[in-house]
Amino acid sequence: MIKGGPLPSVWTAITGFLDTGAVVDMDVAIPSHRTGICSKAGLYRTVVRTDLMTGGYPPSQKNTINGGKAHTAGAGPMEFALSEEQALIQDSARRMVERDIRPVLDRNDPDVSLPKEEMLGIYKVLAPQGLTAPRLSAEEGGGGLSMVNYGLMYEQLPPWLAISVMGHECTISRIHAESTPEQRQRFLPDLFAGKKICGSATSEPGAGSDPRGIATRMRIEGDEIVINGRKMWITNGSVADVIAVACVGETDAKGRTTLKRVIVEPAETDVEIREIETTGLRQGHLAEAVFEDCRVPRGNLLEAGGDAARMLTVTWNGNRPLVGLAAVHLAQKALDMACEYAGIRVQFDKPIAGHQLVQKNLADIETAVVTSRLVCYHALEALDRGQRSNGLSAMAKRYATTACEQAINLAMHVHGGMGIACETGLERMLRDCRMLPVPDATNEILTLIQGRELTGIAAFR
View 1 (spheres, rainbow, N blue to C red):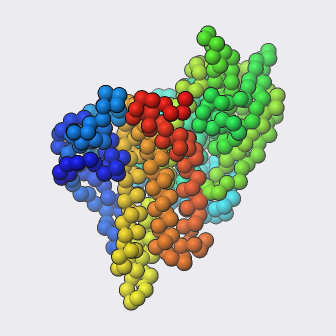
View 2 (view 1 turned 135 degrees about the vertical axis):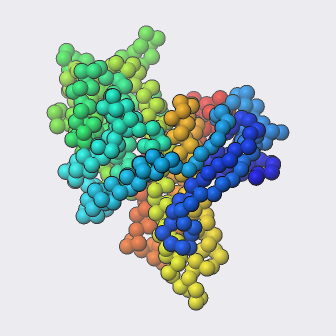
View 3 (view 1 turned 45 degrees about the vertical axis):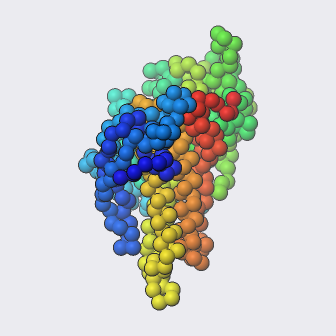
């Protein structure tokens, strides 16, 4: 029982913000570890005073900004334990990775982008699981997954593949939302089936977190669309069969420029694509593209959904907690490795797991993993309920990517000299995790988004 006073910041991050004084009984899942050094998988029960969670303030300090309504959800039981169905979903995804995906990755250089034929083989494995279009219903051709269930599967994927899958499936969601039935029938079936790979071209050298800075332009010439501009950081860019390019279109009735998305099929037109060498996630395919009078059929312009900027925000809110779970995947693996190593490495006549500072590092790593996982699933669950989640999604990605990078660094400390040896794999995991604060908004802009949701005042306008 928390007796009183302000909640620790970590609890603010985990629990969200409830608006009643009810007492809540919670089941909290403890992640499993591979050795006896850390506790085995199980559940513990705890009781939390929800009146201390209103806006993250105790009653005497209740947040009055925005009427105290920021980040507020209805009170009720908070079940953190997985249902039987969710446990099966999670286990199925884990077994799929070990059986069908891990062997492919192991036979390829981890620091070289995976050949396209190998990528297509993996995507054909992912498609029957609904992972090529999890956010669309089965009636629409998608996987029909809730965001929480999608997250349970997503967390099991190797992070570079997780980012690839997210780039593919959120592009499908954007195309679906902005296309006519005829366009959907033309472009989506092969993407659903994993026979083709897609990605979105949104960021530019001068436009990242602010889509209003996009300078790539499109114009209509007869039966063709002509595109001119340069795009950066295209996930799947160098292996994509379909790229959805965000362009500045015509002005609306109020004289404002609008964003339009145009489908470009690199094999069918003239576009220069170059893969970008990155710090981590090197089996992936981040690329830049140059469009110089690139011509595509008039029917490739997606107009049914209005301004394309709207769908950017919708998909970003779902993407951000998922990126956080990619970081959790890495930090969980680092924790397992650190616990195992601490149990077998002997110094001063006992395993280093028996030394106080090593135990502190292990405890801090586990804390980062558990809190990051919880805040990410909290954001995904809010999306499933239809709650406004801009601030929660921003918090989830910002917190998880930062905490998990620190956790991997601590795991390197536990390993001592072996921690900096490439053969251990921790340095690659650290490089991979360092990549994750960047996609779908940097942690700096996410801080300001969270601040805007708390105060109602935008610091970046």
